[in-house]
Length: 231
Length: 209
Image (cartoon, rainbow over all chains, first blue to last red; front, side, top):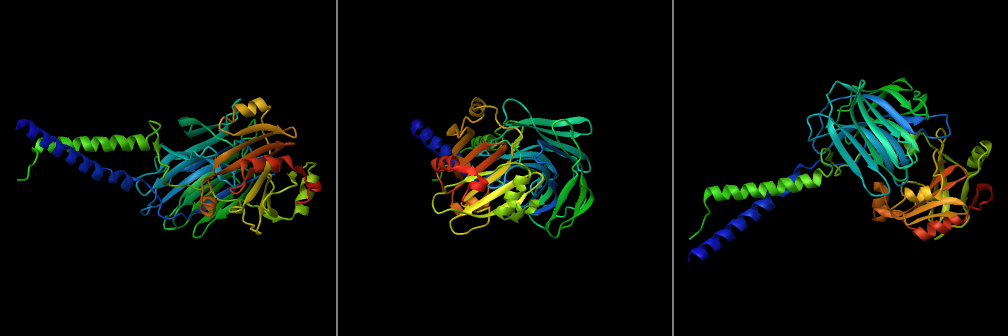
């Protein structure tokens, strides 16, 4: 009798456990940050150069802006090295804010032939601070390796190494990106845009301005701009 | 008679189910320990059209390349009725995208075959080095003394290509020819067809395509 009662209670307990498990398992997908709309809007500079080769490194100082993000959307401010335009491979470093965050977070992202589309958030920014983002080839025997560095002033906040294939740079970009024009990016500021020529880091000395309406770019120089609008 | 478990047992059951869910979520979203993995949404660096490229004729492109004292190679044989539809070119840094299609599609984002050509700043020094950095490639070899590698199922990052061809993997070939890097991708061709295509490459002035 007692054995049968115990058996019934175990079955009841298991049933309740799996019931809770199925209810709770819905939560992560509800909390997961996804975009509702695949549209992208840009404001910033594409790299323009008189050199034959794409440089093997790029860097910029980016002011951390904290602005409102509607549900299902995000904005990001980044530097990128393009590895392929057709299949779309790249290395990207910057900060982003999705509607689930209260402040922008640093991240890095790579797309390459391995299929490892990776986006990693690596700590939060302090809005109002300016950070230096650096992507530079590691120049090691393993040609796939690139170094990523985030600094504030002289302090290195984070550094890491990523491996990509194909590994040769095709182009560079520095942009504010949003997934809806309802996001106001006013105050965005990129400065100290430089490229790596193999020995030193000269300034970008020409550029292509890109701004999707309602966003606009205020050009200060080839290596500095403000991006405003939206909202 | 409805049997109900004691409250303390029910709380324990909820706690264990909650812990299981949290542990599972952490394993999925924190695969690298301290870094928070957020792959479900996509950031996009923009396209070639917005990078200051222009559409050029083959004659114009040949002129630019020959003035620089360089030689570009293009396939002399193309499978499946493919033809060169257009060329997008950006100088400084030099990038050319050759677009091929069987039905005249000129949009590189959805083309059936694209060849991206850019000067190579750091080519592999030998076949051995190329092999060492290509562990997941299916062919790593020399063709016409050029270093070549092909991956049968390279990931397609482009949403436009994935949508049009209904797949997220396709062959990708890479060749280093006389100072240039050639990235050759096609969602409709096989890896072996890409190898044959590279084998047929000839200096641009001699290419009938």
